[in-house]
Length: 95
Image (cartoon, rainbow, N blue to C red):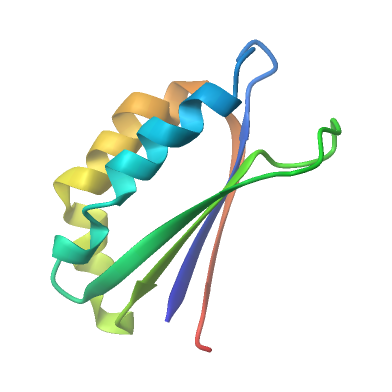
């Protein structure tokens, strides 16, 4: 399954580009979580107010979602970036 996290930073986050490398670094260990096969981080390539800023795509077994939710990496994402987000969307699908 693919687990998509699509996020928009708050307007006061001035340098969104500088956040991409640390976010990539954070998700680089996703494959170490049992049932998670890896993650990719994609910045938005269009700067418009109605666009989200980053899309994180995790490849995982469907039954690994609770393990991912409980993982240190997931908690670190929420703790370090949660206050910077204006909104986010989560979408899961089988491909």
